[in-house]
Image (cartoon, rainbow, N blue to C red; front, side, top):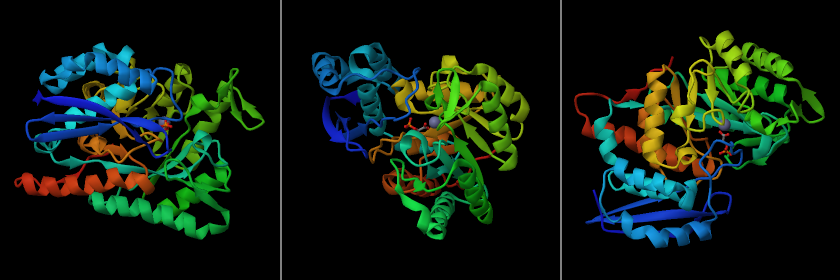
Length: 377
Ligand code: PGA
Ligand code: ZN
């Protein structure tokens, strides 16, 4: 598509931080995209550039971005300028180009929709009493996207109501901040999720817990071996369907051991481990991959990572960040993955409601094939 005119503006994300929004005009179409931002940021992610500096740098090269492009050629130019613009600005620009024609992806897919994986109870660097950053629910029995989102909300509401004397509020991702320790939270969420026939998972974001060679739980320090034992116990005791970053981003040895021990019954998911870079993927150390477009800086980079994930027999999971805008680009991209990790409440509904709209779009535009939920392993 032809890019006639392109510009950047400053907007705010859900944490009240400044972020970039890009606007592209192409004939009578307008594409808008904005960048999310993380709190537990891995060291392998695309580097960020100060917003003032990045926007000034963009002004100097902006003419190069006008003319005829495909998503790939537009993103290639962004990748060449990643050092000057930072992943924060390239992501907004890449999203804006994609959004000129985002519906075309709906026509190209097989009509499978992802299961929403929702962060019910939060902790770690997202705030909360637990060291576990997220306890997640997955409505594996839902028949459609609407029912799946409703199930996650029901679980979230029931925890909040039943334990209102232990409820402090909600965190950056809209997850409940509760007066629960790790084990208590796991027990309560698994009991309530079980009532709704949903499965549970956790994101430990363990790079954040790892200090001076040990995994730190308050005053308590666990060796790598002890961390392996604790994680194994949680997978078994709570029948976890999903465990993300149970070890720090360079602890490949533990990842490999866990993959060998539980790889056939649980998704062992790499977030900071792979940082959406396809060259980092390794199916011997995990069987699932978090895909966050801003970790690589472009839509094409994220799609290539999804394709390689599938080729390696691993499960891709499209994910939001803890600092978000109402941008819904990743709802469209999640048509390429069986799981969409978008949170449950607050600003997170922007993307979840987009999934409901996409389901209807599929019904309208794909008359031969009913939309259906993706296959889970
Ligand atoms: P982040 O957290 O967006 O703060 O990095 C989400 C995650 O770790 O998955
Ligand atoms: Zn994570």
